Each structure stands twice: as C-alpha cells, then as structure tokens.
Image (cartoon, rainbow, N blue to C red; front, top):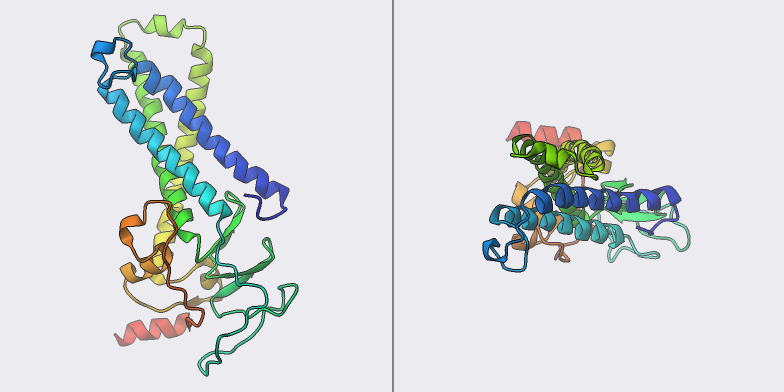
Length: 284
C-alpha cells in the first residue's frame, strides 16, 4: 500500500480496508450476533460459540469472505506487479521483434519487452500491466493479477452477503414478536442508520466489483490487458483455460487461495494488431 509516495493512493488503500472492517462490524453486530445469538449452552450448535446453527453458517461464510478480502488486498498491494528489473537486457536478440529500452525509466538503461508498459505512478515498467489501481495503490500486472482478481471476487461476495444480512435484519425486526422492545433499545438509532449505510455500501460494491470482474474475465479470455486494449493489440490467441493459467498460475486448484502463483513468464511474447487478429478469426 506504500509502494508509491502518493498520499492520496495510500489513504485510499487504507480507506478500502476500513470499509471492509465497517461492513464486517455491521454484519456481525446488527444481524449475526444479535438475531442469531443463543446464550443457552445446551442449545448452542457448537458449545462455547453463542450462535444458532443458522447464525454459525452466516458467521463462517461472511467472516470467511471478509478475511479473504483482507488477505488478497494486502497481497495485491505489497506484491511485485511484474516490474522489469532496472538495467535488464534482452537474454538474446530476436529477429521477430524490435529490441528497445524504456525512455522513461530513470537510472540504467532497461529493456522494455513488447508487453511491458511504463507506469508513471510507480516509476518503472510492468510486464503485462493492466492498470494502476488506486484501491491497492499498486499496479496490476503479470505477478499480482491473481491477488487482484481474488480481491475483486471476495469483495463482491462479502458485499452481496452484507446486503443480504441487512435485509434479513430488517425482516427479523418487522416479524419479531416484540418489535417495540428492539426499537426501544438505546442503540437502535445507531444500528438502524449503520445498517442502512452498510446496505448501500454492499449494493454499490457488489455491483462495481461484478462489473469489474466481468471485464477482467473478458480480458483474460482475449489475452488483452487494459493497456493492450488502448494500444489495440492482443497477446497470443488460445483457449480461456490456457490464458487463465498465464494470469492465475499453473495449478488451478489454488486459484481462489492467496498463495504465490507459479507463472510462466515469456518476455518475448509477441503481440498482434487488432485488425490482424480479426483477420485470423475470419480465416478460421
């Protein structure tokens, strides 16, 4: 989160974590540990945890997705996005592509592969750079794409669950045998306002991340990052599973876990102009 000295980016990255923490607090405080609380030890599904079976399921699923959102956010923020090492030179010359150095990288001359892009925010070239994300204050590229996608997925799930819990909280309030008793509680106004804000937060982030995830899936399917799209070029055209392995790692069983991906890195990977790719599909 502190990879750049941009104070706005650092603040926004920390604010993202605070939003997750706020939603998690409201979901637990005003729903799970309020409406599904069970103080009778004999009635507790797991003795020592003061929750009913339904509350226990809500607790594990909701807090589990929130925990994964925290971890994936931190890993995406602090991981190397795919930086081209300063002073790196081509291992060998290729007749199929032009070898050129980055004119914007400071310090020693650094080779710039065809699918690398210089990030002005970070100050270095990133291989297969997609974009610079203010929510993590870091670039999204070849080496941290997996963590970024996990962050998007778990934010989408936790936000949707948060909105559902808020709706269920209002439903439980309206159908409770003693509704007035709950409404006369001293903390009711704060819980009511907090739940409304959390509900709106959940809807907005669920919609935003769903749209973002759809774009990223299309990007992987086309083997075309956002930067590639701006340059109107594509990477090697192959099936979705092969492209996904290039972005998320070879072992698909770990795609949803924030573990370090095993990636195949080919700095000599070629790109094709958009018109040429369209011609290929027409010929097929």
